[in-house]
Figure 1 (cartoon, rainbow, N blue to C red):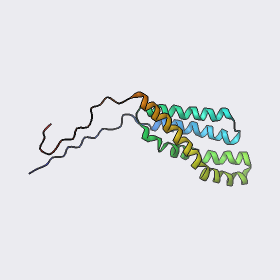
Figure 2: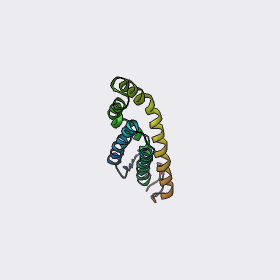
Figure 3: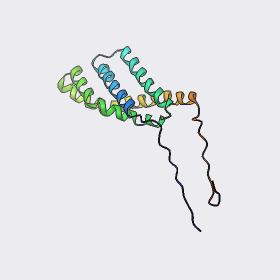
Figure 4: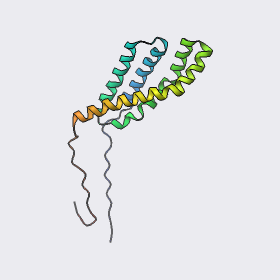
Length: 145
């Protein structure tokens, strides 16, 4: 008796690297401004920029990318946030405050980014509906297509 296994793999429709990098750069600027000169307007712009990425991810059905988005943002924002803390608090104090903010504060910042992006992306994906593709068909070993 011989058995044949056919694997069918569909690649994701859209690469989200470029939009995520643009979002991470925008969030770097926004977080830098939040440290140097905090304001409610900058905070709202940050939530708006994140909502735009969430809409894009939900529309492209790439909600899983929400998991890595805060990490990408952290990678881009690490050094500029250290500089922003040194500008705001002074060189020596700012260096240590920056290390604490980047290390422990990022847990909170990343969590807020994750939750907000996830909520927006899931809402957009739910509103868009299913992809219209056929469901998966599982065939036994004696069945022919």
